[in-house]
Length: 205
Length: 205
DNA sequence: TGTACATCAGTGAACGCGCGTTCACTGATGTAC
DNA sequence: TGTACATCAGTGAACGCGCGTTCACTGATGTAC
Image 1 (tube, each protein chain N blue to C red):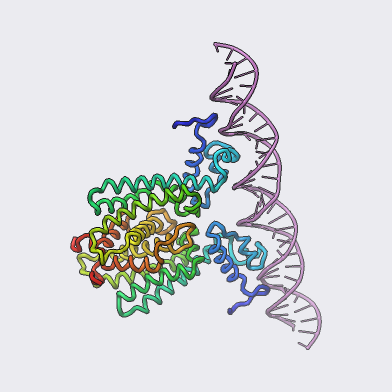
Image 2 (cartoon, each protein chain N blue to C red):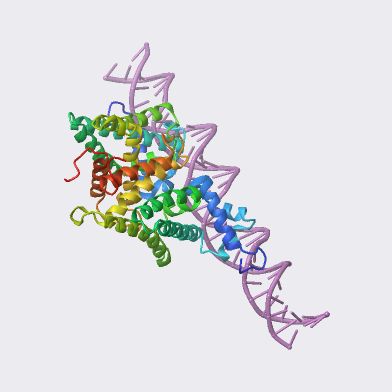
C-alpha cells in the first residue's frame, strides 16, 4: 500500500485484479481490456497510463501469478525439509493448491497464450518456479541408485505434466467433464504410484 | 465424396477443414467464422446454410476429432491384443500420436471451451474414446492382486492426465516453453515408471 | 431432345456491436514560495 | 496560512476495424413433361 495515486489510489493493481477476476470467470477469451477498466471503475483509456495495452496487462497478471506460484512452491519445499520425500510431496500438493486458489493467475500463466519469454523478468520468475520442482526432484533422486536414476529434469517434467493434466482435466469446472475422483486424491495417488515405480517408497504400503 | 452440392461440392466439410486449419494456426481464440468462410472461398453468410453459427462449426470439428480419436485409440488397443500390457502401451502412444497429427482437432476438443455435453452425440463419442482407455486399464489391472488394485477409472484418469499434461506443456510449440525431452520419450518413460509402481512391469528393467 | 419450371446453395449489402487504441482536455492533488 | 503554479491520472469523444448474423436476392443445377 506504499504508493497512493492522485485519484484512484492504486489503479494499476486494481486493473490487474479486475483482469484476473474476468479471466477466472470467462476464460482467457472472455477477457477484454474495456471490461477490466469498467470493473475498476475507470475509462478504458485510463489503462494506458499503466500498461502498454491489453497484452501487457495479461502479462502482468501472469507475472504476479508466477511470483506467488514460485513462493508457494518454495515454501512447500522448505516445509518438508529435511526429508527429501516430504519436501517433494509438499511441492506436488502446492501445485494443485495454487491452481485451485488462484485460478485466474493459473489461466493467465498457462492458457492465455502469453509467452513466458515475453520479457526477461517473466522468464526469470517462471524459471524460479520450475527450479523449485526440479530441485525437489533432484534431492529425492539421490535415494535412487545412480544407474537407474532418471535425469532430474525428466523426473520433474513427469510430475509437472501430471499435475498440469490433473488441473486441466479434472480440477477445473470444465464444462461437462465431471471428475471421477477429487483432483487432490487423483494427483496424490498418481504421484504415489509413480514414486513407488522409482523405488522411492515401499511397494507394499 | 457421396454427396455433391450445387455449387461448391462439399462446402460443409470444406468449412470444417478451414476451421481446423485456422484453429491449428492461431489457437481457439484466433478462429473466426468469417475467416474460415473466406478460406473456403465463400461468403460468411454461406456458413449458415450448413451450421447454426460459429459455435456449431467448432463443435462439429470437435466431434470429428473425437471420432478419429476414438478410432485410433480403439485400433491401438486391438493391435496390442492379446497382451494387456501391449494394448495399454499402444493406447498411450496413440494418444500422443493423435495430438501431434491432428492438432486442430485436439485444440477444438480440449481447448476451445466447447462442452462435451453440448449434444448427446458429442457426449457419446467422447465417452467412446474414454472407454477405450478405461478398458485397457481394466484389462491390465487384472494382473494386480485385487487388494492393491486401484479402481480402473482412477488408473485411466492418471494416464489421461499424464498424457494431456505432456501434450499441453511439451508437445505444443508452446511459446517459449522448450521441451527438455522429446514428448514421446517423456510420456513413455513416465508411463513406464507408473506401471512399475503398480507392479505391472519388473523393477529391474 | 428441348423447354419451362422448381430448388436452394451461395451472394452481397447491410446491421449493430464492442473491441483496442488515440488524443486533446480537465481538474484533483501536491508543491513552492 | 494562503496563493499561484505544475503535475499528471483519468476523461470523454472519436476512430477504424472485424466480428457474427440477417435478409432479400440470383443464378447454377436438377427435374418434369
